Image (cartoon, rainbow, N blue to C red):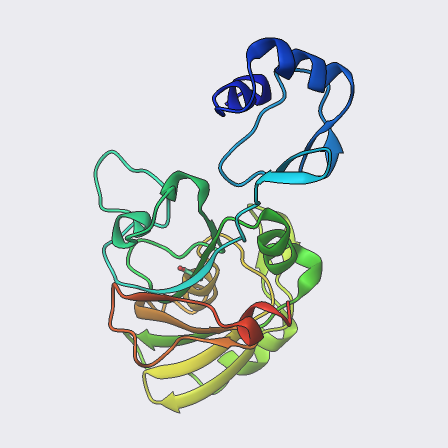
Length: 230
Ligand code: URA
C-alpha cells in the first residue's frame, strides 16, 4: 500500500493533512523520511509521524521445517505440493527458503522473511557446513572419502568442489559434510562412482540441527540461539 493511503485510512488524518505531513518530512517509514505519497508501506514496515509510532514493524520470522520427500522447495508449483503449503502462517508469500532441497530429499529446511539473514546463510563465502545422511544403491568404497576431500571437477559449472568430508556409517550409508550447495551436488558426487543415491536427508546447517521432535512435514520457529550464530 502507498504511505499516503495508509495514513488517510487512519481516522485521525484527512487527505489534506496527510499531504502536509509528507511535504513537511514528518512521516518516516522504517526510519527513513517519506516525502513521496507513493512510498510503499507493508504490514512489516514501521510507520511514524513526528516520532509517534503509528504501526510497529513486525519482527522477522524464522522457521525450521522437516521437509518430507515428494515436495518442492519453492513458494509455488503448478504440479506438486510446496514446502510453503505445509506452513500455517499469515503472509506466507513473504517467506522464502534459505537453501533448497531436491524434490525427493528430506530434512532440515530453513524458511524466513529476513533476506539479510538468509543471504548470510547461503552466500558462498559463508562456508557453513551442511551435513547430509546419504544412502546409496551400491556399497560406498573406502576411496570415496579421499576423492571427496580433494574436490571433484564439475564440467558444467567449470569448477572443482570444495573439500567435503565423508564419514562411513555402514556399507551403504554415510554422513557427508559440504560447505557449499551446488546443483544436485551430493547425487553428482556419488554419481562419479556410478553409485546412485537412493535416500538423502539433511540433518544440519551450521549449528542448526533438525529437531528430532519434528515429524516429516512439521515445523517450528527457530530459537534465539539458533538464529544468532549465523
Ligand atoms: N545435494 C543433492 O543432490 N540434493 C539435495 O537436495 C541437496 C544436496
